Image (tube, rainbow, N blue to C red; front, side, top):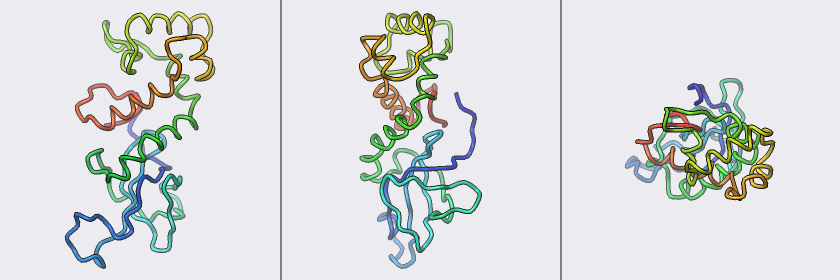
Length: 187
């Protein structure tokens, strides 16, 4: 489980140039807002863009402390319920992009996942992995560590798309605030 740290890059889920619709102030008093997801810990964020910035959906924007190009500041961290309908619709596609770009991190998860309690293994937290499949994964990785998603699906026939299991788990962690174990996200 990852330690709490600041996100440096985020991928845009929605751009609200006239602010939130629920904001009852006149349009000219509302500030523009960008809803985005961090690329390291999948934090959902609201950002305030610079007035001259042109920002597109799925664009990767820098939000670190140094000189920002298109983002003025991080306004706040938000929850799944705060996302617009557009942002919710884009979220699975953006998570999938991040998983593909960080494939090795997630393959490492399959190689290094450990028991959380005597009866619960980190692999059990992935949708579709029960005891039998968990033992098959553990036996295969003991023979030779996995090196890609393709390698996992070739050696474990019951897992044709390991990236989809990871995507489903990340979505569950973001959507359900009562999830006890956060493997890929932070609370």
